[in-house]
Length: 240
Image (spheres, rainbow, N blue to C red):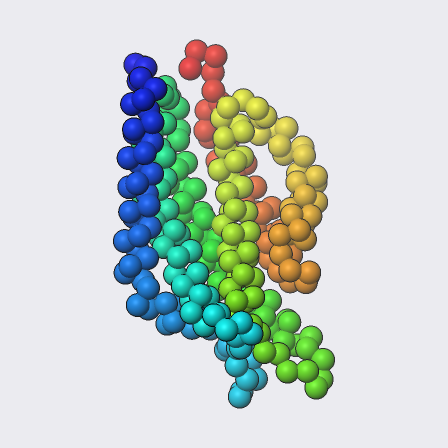
């Protein structure tokens, strides 16, 4: 591995950050004309369950503009994530050994896929169940009219929670591959990990048993999946 002068490192960081920002900007410009339509699509899981004649509201004057724009901006970052991760990978790759490169490349793509999968799971599976539960618990005489800004903050929090939670197999494989822990040791800690999964579900989701369980159970199952794959991924040897 050849060392690069410090100034050249800074120039490379600057160039790669600019390319990341450019990717986000391109997606932002493409999606901005459809900002309102994107928010309507995002709100479908709730709107489909709300009683006929009810609707969402905006309690702040600027919310009808800023909320769809915020969604568009976050979606632009979301869609540009492969580009962002590529430039991060391209920056650190020259400083890695060959065996490290061979491990990180598939894990990088797997991590992006699992994050997207976690978000899709939240949108198509979790939201209908959670919103249905919340609406069923609404007291008689109370009309549920959700503020669009608070709704966006809520769903972004859930997206983030499930996207991160779905990284459990990657973390498991990395821990085993680097020799921090063995698959056998992880298997012995299974009861503690299951308890930890439900604690994480409690902390990262709204205070209802459905969303907490729908996060905790996938964490547990993904841990088991990571444990299976970690047994076939060779552990880092001293000669690596």
